[in-house]
Length: 421
Image (tube, rainbow, N blue to C red; front, side, top):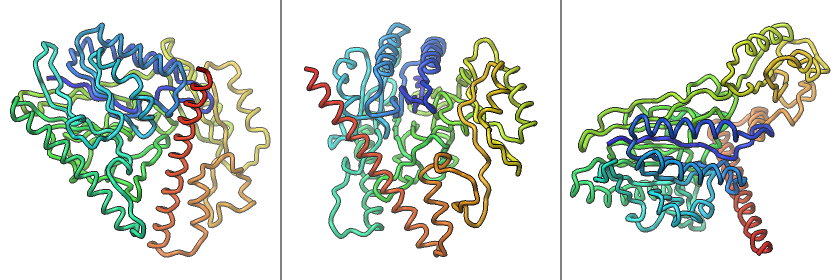
């Protein structure tokens, strides 16, 4: 039995005002060929198929076209899990129709463990593995809050509820697996303890739980995870893996090789996990230095572009003490005749005891919300415990705001569709 594990496609992502449609189309074409060449029996997408709860129409079209084309390259079974960026309503609206195309969609955790179990078949139609389909778990899916609960008790309760949910689904899967003599695969879309984040990952803070311990997972033969965009093994457990995103979603992901994972089983046991490198369709690069060195770096990068690659997108970070008033124009003059596109030009942030002082010549437009909070917090004389508590409270507020924005977008779209009817 051969599984292909991927995640975090983020269809519909706009990167600094630029659409990623071309890169996603090229990736999907490559993936379809890989599924055929590698004779994949089942494909598992472990969350964040879309970048937003209300994806643009072209992103939905890519998603639907991919599923149709997947059935043309063989009898590969598809399982799509919901992620924290995905709208449950958006995923579920086509679930029944996609079931006719050998596709199972699990948008949200259910109170019925049986509904999250999928028997994965080999190409010959015979059962090959049992899947515990665990999507991104929202607190309301597994936990009822009580007034007066402390932060610590909420964290303990949520961890217990998530662990219990995994165990409940696993126990049902185990019954089928033993009966059929099959291995068990589990999924998840979350941050695990020790997982490496990147700039494009929106940290998941479920209630007050920032990361799920690897020891809380059930003893599945393989655990396919999503959410972190860097492919990695969790806590030295070779069978617990993040596939990572198939294209770089931020400048700090540009240096790592993107991949999908081929997971092979021999009978009831995991045989091997093989990373398959995804081609680099568009290079993202962050270049740093003074104006002279940046000119040389930009020219070198332009010379390395191949005809097959899309125009590289570049971030330029100007270092040095010299103040340059027209950065954007100076960089534009250098790149006018080069086959590259500069998306962002900024000065290197100077570290000091007071990073928010007026003398830094740095604007709020160059900072993220989390950066502003961290720098303001750094100016206070707080103990480790108080600082950690404030940071945790801040992350909870940000998570709530993001959830409200997502819900508002979904409601607004529903109203617009009703008015159109």
